[in-house]
Image 1 (cartoon, rainbow, N blue to C red):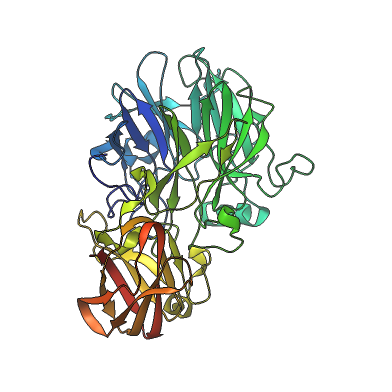
Image 2 (image 1 turned 30 degrees about the vertical axis):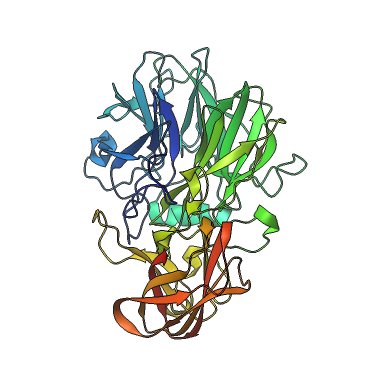
Length: 485
């Protein structure tokens, strides 16, 4: 590891959710949709990708724009968003990009000679008679969030699906005019040309309305199809009806026999360490798992800016048991670092893995009024989208709010320095667990500009530790950096 890496693992000005991690050659590539900071809809930017050497997941490199939204023949005016994609290497050695245009029911395919593109539009996934798969709601299920598997025998499988409740189905039709038709998750096999259906669609796992007695109850399919194969076992990874959860199902077949496996990741950190209440402001989740040598990593995303439209990729190491089941990964600030962060030096406050208001954390989009925004904190930034300048901070910590980091490796630091702003007057209390005993106390005063305040640790702090900051006082506190010395 040449340098440390945090969560989010990409630059703080980058908003790439729905991450599909793929290893091609000796590099790990991340393919996802591309949110725009402070926007009012999902995925408004063009596709870009980053890559890192498989032996150094701290060294992410920007590979540039790989595909523009107006390259799709149905979107030459660019009015539709590029929703969550997947990329696979075909039997011919070329790289195939599968994606959907927001709520247009079809799967578009683009192709390139290299993992970083540039990709050129190829075709829409289609029936043998040439009809576009998904465009006829009387014939086809609604197409959404494609995931693709090229198996060792070169057989090709396409997984898609969307399973909203009736209320959302009606809302989508009202807003977009789209009639979804048959919803739920489905799998088809494709011909060697990567675009033509070889089989008819069939349901893979239960949806919310047909799960009784299946073992999927409470974790039914909602969206975000992704498929992996590890050690001869097929893993279907998806966002469950809980929204914040990435779940998985396993089978010895790519098209049938899947049983519920468990939770992989929650961007509320629910289910980890017996958490029954959200430890973080949460929202939809979408990602997958990658194997690198003998290690596994789960990729998901977090919410920022009081919305679901400014999401950022996060990643964690995850353990695969001898029973072929993954153990759920907890949210951390150190993510792909290979261990805790050094408990010395300066860190951006926005790498927080836990964030709670005075009365806890709720779903990000539910913080939707001026009154609620005055009560709840959020991670935001003070520059426009794509500024390429580190500009994130934790906004609006009110008295009783907490911000948490996991993990640091401390060697008895003497001082804690914080960079703060806002109308706050009071104290910031540091502890090694949420609401835990005080290990440092800093006085903060109102400041329109960023200013620094320092406090001394009141006891020795050593080894791998979580680190929490709680504001106690009046007004609103913004937090930009923390520094251990």
